[in-house]
Length: 281
Image 1: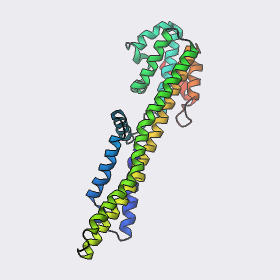
Image 2 (image 1 turned 180 degrees about the vertical axis):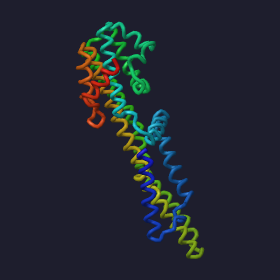
Image 3 (image 1 turned 45 degrees about the horizontal axis):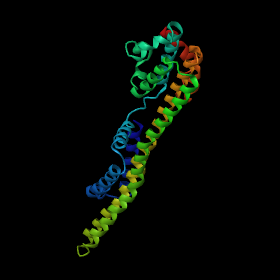
Image 4 (image 1 turned 135 degrees about the vertical axis):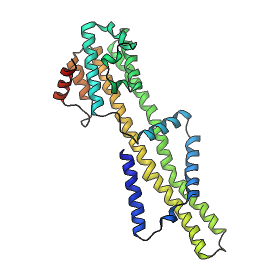
């Protein structure tokens, strides 16, 4: 949502200032310049990345138009889910997790916002299966660290791809401008008024390349980075909960260790969490 608002502010400020200074908006409408810049940038984007990274970059970029799923409500449901999970283990034993892993009772433990994150649930299930096999806590911690490291590397690849597009757009804007100058030079015999329009069109290419890069693409890459870090924090929070569960800690201490991993802006209040736990019983 804020990305859209930002785009509106950028366009409004640019066009407002341009019109107020006596400029004519029609001069900025250069569809062939846009075709050259975006077409070249997209071509470089495709040939410079694998199909999985291309899909991930497009999915991540479009997701920035909506709100982040990792909000205070998500973390509240995550903490409540782990409280229910550790209580179940204490009352029914570790083998009771088989029903959780194999789906039948999954929605009795994990709440909707957590269940909606399929990759996070897969991470939880995989490690619960290992706990059922009797894996040692140190081995579980080492394995989850490795999974998070791989997740970190995979998650950064689409972000770098989008940043690469942003870095290249000003250069493609210059390419479009140079092509416009070439076209202008071969038309030197036309009237000065027409020649001026060609020069203006060429200059618009440079303007558009810089604007698209720093006004539209790079901010999206920044939001993608922030969203990814928020998602990584959720994984770290889950990792802490799994390790506490494997160590046999009480539900209260497990939830508190997890709560300590959450950033201050998203962290549920202690008393609010306690009230929600009592309400769920």
